[in-house]
Image 1 (cartoon, rainbow, N blue to C red):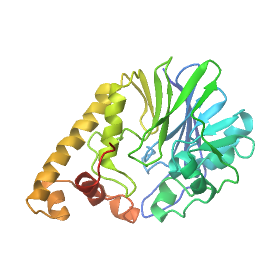
Image 2 (cartoon, rainbow, N blue to C red):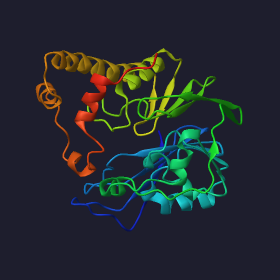
Image 3 (spheres, one colour):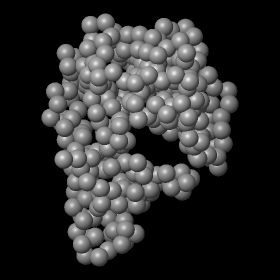
Length: 292
């Protein structure tokens, strides 16, 4: 049984929908791994989506969302975190890094360092959901491997969701900290402009072939024996791609393909200022290529 602690902020942000105080939870997965969960909840007090950082010994893998920065700072003040390893520069993954700087060394892939130092201003919806990250003064280039006690981690490229996204694989325990390599919904049909869906599928196909006993997903949490979990997402995307390509060859427009496939967005999609779109997904299926 995972042990939980919950803390709530006293303020929320309103953006046309009701919300309650922000959320911060700690769950102990094992003696070596602790989940640091951050989120903005809806009116029913359920989180919009958890953003999960993982503590392993005295390091963190990602750092949570900036909306929970007050609680993250309180946590950082009482815990000895020497290093933070960032999987990719989306605000729900690096937004809590400022709570650990300058006392902890922050690592990121070299092409992403400038984003952490100069975060883009987010659309209002994402400032509500995750928060606006603070800039970091110092960010170091990710090493190819690192150790935490008797755990030895390999930095594994996981492109698709973002070009330079990485995960961290521990071959002895057969753990993979996979960031957003595996979509949260089984039926993924919404994408961001930086996502390459064929590359995402290619990455997931590689993960299915890896020896992984626990997949530490950044939003779902730990997934044991994850091959079936990953394959279900591959199958849906591949089948959708086949249908979309057939319709495209027949001369159907992107809008018509979306209509025929019956892909309808959630209520909030218009609030994202088109950062999330179904047509991003369809266009990527039709025109992006997997890596050779």
